[in-house]
Length: 333
Image (cartoon, rainbow, N blue to C red):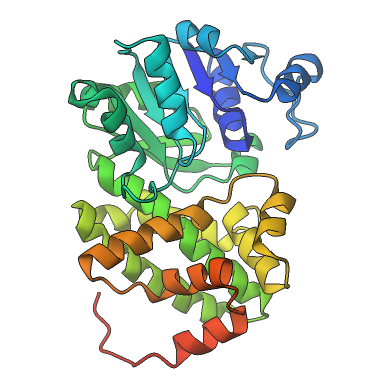
């Protein structure tokens, strides 16, 4: 197939290269002309030196060319930047009808919309059957290294789920279909907040006991808030929930974990994001999650702690103290 990938950051490039290695013709778009030129001349991505890109992956800075090229569009921008990109698509092609596979993970601030809901807000309900997503525990570096990885694909259309599985699956990359699109997206968005907390915990020198508590109670927060979006709670037991949470909280290659670790070491939030050089989705999502929680009357103590550290200047040690002095209630699963 001819496939367009919108976004050539670490994850976008990884997926684009994987698709090219599976025999597809891939045109990757980036607004960064220097990155486009670097990819086309050196055949390597700056984030992955030593990994040669596939010959059937070409990069471009021409958005219209990229949009016209693909039979299918793969989105790998950011949840914060997705609306702008969708509006750009609509302006070029008001009757846009190509299938769109989403990979960004986040919740839009103020609206509380997940990425597929933003797509519907821009294109309308007529586009519903064209939306799919790919999510789950998948660190880009490990996929580039062809380490065994299992993900989840979802869509309102079973045919599109079959297509996503068909174009992505290979001996090291497995894709399991799950029809709960909202649940798959929600788990992928919320785990980034908990990963920041785990990075902070490790940065403060705490051990496995502390991190296990953060992950377990973090999953509880995700479950509580998922009711607001109407997710199937069972989805959060799978790859798109617990699986993605484990990978992002445990891997030192996770940008959200690394951000939290640097914060614990005393690096200011803005500087930490610049040092990482990629969008730290949990920084934006914690605001959206608290907005959703406030409207529904749902308490999110870990999420609140991350917000207070990043945006209110609360010291990580003080945030830990506040969490540990909360009233102890019966554990509800």
